Image (cartoon, rainbow, N blue to C red; front, side):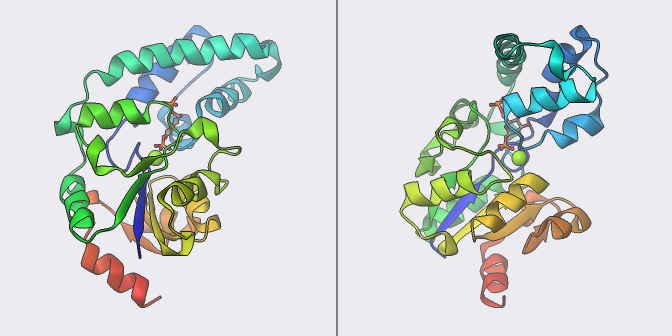
Length: 221
Ligand code: B16
Ligand code: MG
């Protein structure tokens, strides 16, 4: 293995609650019911696709023009970005910093494959930008997760063949993306959900990310 490619939201830090608050306020203003279950389904899904799912859920798909929908996503993002200011290095999930150090010591390349356009800002707030050899701009890929595009682009930017990459994800869409890209997939979450999505190795908590165990599992596949 030569590279590890990370998802951001839900793997490196918990922004799901902040996305929830910003989407909830927007949905309330549109008189659409929004709850944690729907928020869960938006994990790994890009901004416009997320809005379309919310409008679809509220039966309002045809009520807005494309220009109005862009304005709605901007409204949500302005609120979300303001909420991001509460992030600091303390917001990094347990074990992630140590894992990044291990990867560096093993001379592995490190990439970010997040659907979030706010990825670089979040890495800055967490003060871990320097660990990353590459960050994929989600705008530069044609299809979002579950398509493999964003993980393939990360591998391309790292100049590593996808079969030599490990991807780490917390969403089902993300695991599909990694597997379709031909990579080894680590799922962060419950065994049942992550295995069903196709993860090769499941960890319930980021503090259980141990390189020796991972490489052992890769070698015994
Ligand atoms: P933004 P990931 C995803 O990030 C989030 O899981 C998803 O909920 C969000 O809608 C998407 O990023 C876009 O984020 O609005 O900040 O561009 O899990 O792929 O790191
Ligand atoms: Mg995620």
